[in-house]
Amino acid sequence: MPTDIQIAQAATPRPIQDIAKKLNIPNEDLIPYGHYKAKLPLHLYQPNRAAQSKLILVTAISPSPAGEGKTTTSIGLSEGLNRIGKQATVVLREPSLGPVFGMKGGATGGGYSQVLPMEEINLHFTGDFAAIEKAHNLLSALIDNSLHNKKSTLNLDGRTVLWKRVMDMNDRALRNIIVGLGGTGSGIPREAGFDITAASEVMAILCLASDLPDLKERLGSIFVGFTKDRQPVFARDLKAHGAMAALLKDAIKPNLVQTLEGNPAIIHGGPFANIAQGTNTVIATRMGMSLSDYVVTEAGFGADLGAEKFLDIKCQSAGIAPSAVVIVATVRALKYHGGVDKAELTTPNTQAVDRGLGNLEKHIQNVQQFGLPAVVAINAFTADTSEEIALIKERCEALGVQVVLSEHWAHGGAGAEGLARELVETIDEHKADFKPIYDWNLPVPEKIEAVATRIYGAEGVDFSREAKRDLRRINKLGLEHLPVCIAKTQYSFSDDPKQVGIPDPFRLQVREIEIAAGAGFLIPITGTMMRMPGLPGVPAAEHIDIDADGTITGLF
Figure 1 (cartoon, rainbow, N blue to C red):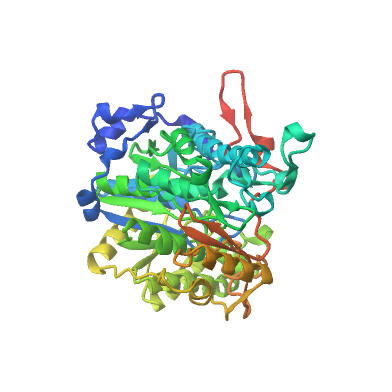
Figure 2 (cartoon, rainbow, N blue to C red; figure 1 turned 60 degrees about the vertical axis):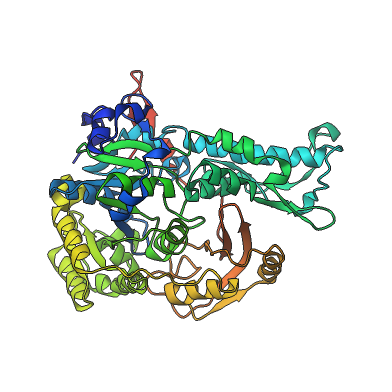
C-alpha cells in the first residue's frame, strides 16, 4: 500500500470554494490562503443552529507506541457519515512541528482517511502556531523589560515570575536557561526556560475563547508573578493584552480544508492532552456545529486525558455536550497493555489481547460516568486475526456496548460506513445525559481527587510540599473556583508511564500546581511530566526531505 504522503499527493483536491459550498458558506465570507485553505469569519457561528447539531467525540484507550488512530478514525467516520447521506464535518487540532519532526512525522490522519493539503497542514499551515508563539513571547519580552527598566512602576519581583518562553519544536536543551547575561545593558539575569508552543497558556486561551473580546480579556488575566510587596501582577498590568490580541487577530479564525473525499474539515488550535487540554478551539467546534448536522471531533490521547478535559473543561466552559463518544481500540494496543513488547505486536496473541481488555473496559466505564453513550471502534490493521477481533467484540457485548470493526484506513469512508450507521443509531436511541465528574466550586484538592479516583482509578492523591504551597497561592489569588487540567503521562492511568494496562494500586503524586488564570484552569503536574519534549534517538526529521521541484517526502 502507498505511504500516507503518497496517497495525499496522488489526490486531486477541490478548490476551497467548492468545499465551502457544501457548508452553504458564500465566497465573500471566505478568507483564502491559497487554493485549498481558507480562514472563516467568526460571524458564521449561529447558536440556534449549533444547538441542533449532533456532536460526536472520538477518544481512545491508553496510547501505545504503535498508535491508535483517533485522528484517522475521526476523519474516516466523517467520510462515512457523508457517504450514508448525513451532512458531517470533522473538526480537528492543528499539528505541532515538535511531533512532526520528532516521533510522529505528521498528524493529518493516515491511509485513505486524511485531510488535505497534507504537507501544508503539517508544516506551518496558516501560521496560527507562529502567531501564538509571537504573542506568548511578546509577554515574555515585556516582563523582562519591566524588570530591566528602572522607570517601571510595577516593582515586579523577578524571583516570582513563572512565565517561560515558547517554541514549536522539541528541544530539551531549552527547558532550563539563564536569561539576562552579558552586562547591565542585557537585562536582569534570572532563571527561565522554554515550553513547547502547544503547552503555552496563550494556546489554551485561544482554544477556550469565544470571540475576540473574550480572547483579549483572558490574555489580560494571565498571572505573571508578584510585586516585591507581594501583590499579584497580571498581563493587563504590563499593558500586554492589547498587543497580544492584535497578533492573534487572524489566528482566532478557524481554518477550512478538506478530506481526501472532498468533505469539509475545520482545523484549529493544537494543545497537547498530556500537558494541556488536548482539544481544538471552542470557536471551531461551535462553527462546525453551526454549519453541519453532525460534527466529529477528537480529543488527545486516552479518555483519561483528552476526553476528561474536553468534558470537564471545554464543554462546561462552552456550554456544549457530545451526543455520543467513540472509543478507538486496536488489537496491537491491547496486546501492548497485555504485556507484549512493541516488536511482537503483530504476532497473533489472544491471551495478551484478553489481558489488555481491562484497559478498554476502564475507558468505557469512564465515558459512561459522564452519562454518555459509547461505541467502540476497532481500528483494523492487516495483522489482526479474526480470533483477536472476536475476543474484543465478545467483551464489549458483555458490557452492553456496541462495537464495530472499522476499515477506514484501508478503504476511507466506505470502510467506515458501518461505524457511521452505528453512531447514528446510537444517538437516535440513547439520549445523552451529560454530567461532569466534579463541580467547579469544590475545593481544588477535591477536584483533583475526583479525577484521580473516578477516572484514573487511584486510591487517593498525595500533594508535595511545593503543591501545598501552590494551593495556598491559589487561595490567596481567589482562583479556587477554576477547573483542573491535570498534566499526566499518556501511557498509563497512573503517573508512572511504565504501569500499562490496569496499574497496580497507586496514589497520584501531585508535585506542583501551575496557574493558568487566563485560560481559566489550574494545572496540577504529576510524576516527571515535561512541558518541553525532547527528540527521540532517531527523529522523524531525518527522513523528511524536499526535491528540486518542491515535492516533500518523508511525512507519514
